[in-house]
Length: 298
Image (cartoon, rainbow, N blue to C red; front, side, top):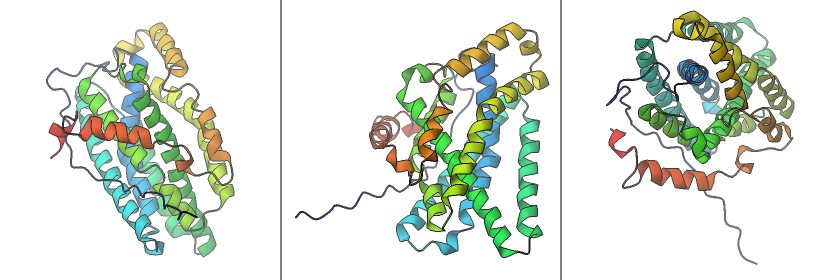
């Protein structure tokens, strides 16, 4: 009988990279295919990434001392490095978006509220069981969010019709890179959650809650963003409504709610969804000898 071959361990790689937004052509206000709704959605996601990545890193890092598997420890180190780099590069994009009129103060307020809530929960409960549940909840949120971002990442990298909408070349470069690395580390937070004994009921119920609010939250967020800081968009409500409907029915968001279903099954693992061929293709496409982003690496 042939010996079983252990599956190859994929270690996320932290890449020193820099994007040059607004070069060589100035960034347009509606930088995603001249689409108000889509441009604001990408802006909202970008604004949410820096505080979100910090939350994910904290949620995973708390359990560093409990990690005994050297492979998982190395993957966690790569995960942390990638997420911190994502936050820094999206902060650069956010500064550029601010220069063309975007403001996402409401995202910052939500991020601050989440930080304060997390700090309160860390200190308010002397009962160790409640503290453990609080920290496992943060980790389950991280694992669920990583699944959502992996779904969106795979869509971006496998559907040319989505990439064609990314008409600002440097924003497209950023999103391609971010999507690729999200697939590289898509199972790290999940594996930490499983390694520290996170229960299936909490993992599944967290996904149910997050999936229920995701699309409504995206939609309301776009309209709040336009109302708060886009006078031109406010003057075109019918256009905005039409673009919002097209966004919800388009290839980026349509079916997102359905794609939560595998995650709701007991025994699910993110690597059950095989994205190795996508990673192999885009590793060469982005960082091969003639890779699109070789000149972006520091």
